Image (cartoon, rainbow, N blue to C red; front, side, top):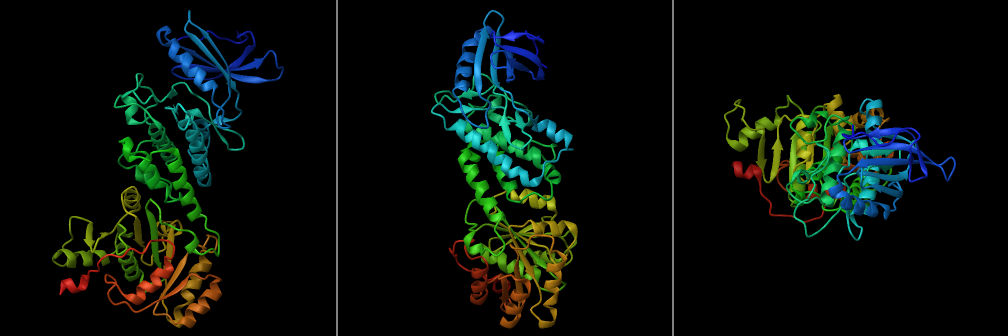
Length: 497
């Protein structure tokens, strides 16, 4: 509630034109009323009342003039301004926007906003932030939060409160007034520096995390990974993590930069059925997930995941290979060899390294979410042949899903069976890998699946080492995805001898 009593009540007239009808809402610094226009019958406006300290009335007037100069479809038009110095009352008259706040929407829908609407909403927010930040005198909003976002019946977004917006002044080291909502405001809004465009981007990260955790979190704290909704696009997580960096220089530096990253990610995610991945390059910033799923026991999923990881690492990309299974033993045995650990004696660390690839053994989904916020360019998930809900979800939402099935003629039907069992899910991104398959088996499977991304994998005894034939296949599989900048090769097995 506003600390001081309102000067307005039902029937009060502001500026000899706007008659108060009812209260729309209130906060710590202001109240908002609906008012009818006495000169334009039937027209309604929102009137925001603030009680300002007379000492800062000049600042309030300057800010009001700045807001009146703005014009953007996602901002309410501010059409009038009245001030009463004797009482400290200030009134802004602006568009009345029909709808509910995002905060109220989340409460009414049990903390759920459809996942397909999150990125469009983020792009709408970024559109208006880009407009504000690129004014000749940049405008910093400083209070981006669910209560200040109005959703129209068409699910379009409007910013509705400019109570603490300010013009950015390059000669200042710090803000003279530290304001913002705890949990949504950037650290520098609490006295560590002057707010700028990157402060609003931090708040955008807080808003996205709020949406992705069903309204439970707006700060990246311990354990938050476990509350991120499972069906959300993976590429959102590293974007949110970067937006929420404590130091402004570590965040995205402009709204335009975030828009570019979201659009590139969305374009990749929504590649059309039948479209070659060569036309959807992944050669941009952010962590990308490759998920390797075997259709049956012994199909070679782990062997393929290792080969793919070292192939990517040889092209100078930072790679994590994750064993997404709490009871798997393959990586534990490998770690024993790499670190010289006695057989059966587990290492205290679940991470070890081979030729630049970081191996993570027996990893959980929450661990994967943490890794997505790190510096890896690629995360390869070894899902084994398990099709439990958790691993299947990770496969379905990976940026680059790989199905590994036996190349034997009599086992090819295992792959078609998997495809049919999951036919309700989009499969245009899937890639099928058949170790030791004949060209005829590949041709027949492509025809049966009506899918051109089916590859025969050659004999490759050492997945840690480079092999020309395997590289040719992987070059084709990842065409347009990575740049070909190869680094010196090392042999894992040779070093062990």
